Image (cartoon, rainbow, N blue to C red; front, side, top):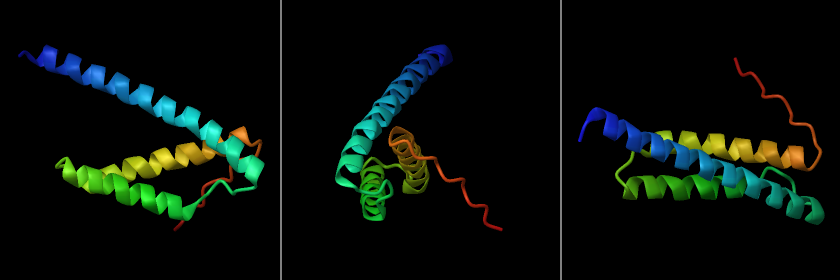
Length: 99
């Protein structure tokens, strides 16, 4: 297999990852609708903890370093919360700068 063929496979995987992230973001809109109806806050620390623990476990089971996987999912969760706030018509609070 040539380098070009391997890179083409990587590109296909990248495209699928983007499609899956888009699907995840669309689900955030559905979650927002339920949360708004039921008066549930956007941020759910327990859910975040559960998701991060689960994906780190999956990472280990797939022989991946769980630390970068955790970082990736922290970003995905942040994106979902931002989408939920936007969907609910709330402004997204600015990130705090810690020095």
